[in-house]
Length: 215
Image (cartoon, rainbow, N blue to C red; front, side, top):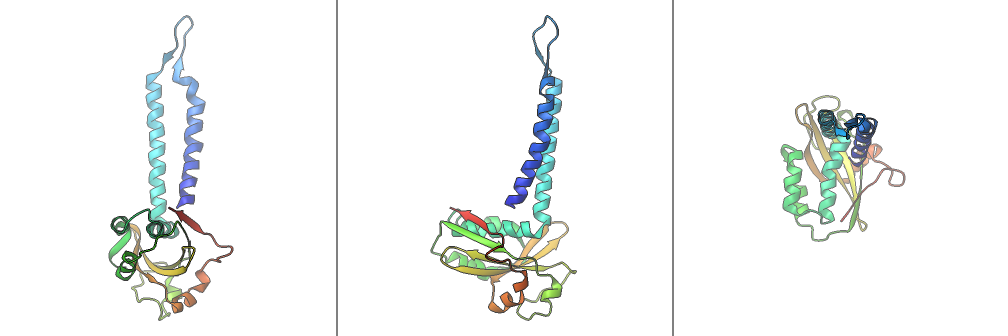
């Protein structure tokens, strides 16, 4: 999510800044023997064009967040990390995470454990696994039973939370909806059997990508 935001900001800068720079001299004109006059119609046109580009890129960014499972997972897990570091309280966590959940999502066990958390950390980091598609989990008894929609839906993702004193793995199920993107349908602390079954999807703690959240 952080990388995607950076990429879209770079795209905005590469479009808008040259657009303004190449046309700055055209924002006003000066005829011989007269004072320089501002060309308001041209300024209005440039403003509308820049607003259009900005709105288009913001919309594209939101679509990217919804359509890429790893970005949708990162956005959801980031809320978990923000809660651990004390940036948000429980009620705020619930209000912000609810729109990311499937209707009837099975997350009660996780949220109950979250509500009872009495220790906050200054910094938390986390890793996200590759997706675990149906062909890898259908025959695994350790994974929750779920209705398979197609070859890539739903998927399971394992993520690791490292708060500096302990490391905890969590399992989430993500379901794709054509009209709403990826939604979280299940979440719980990952069991040893699940970690063993999904170990090929787990990133290396040494060379894998870490996301950091600080208070």
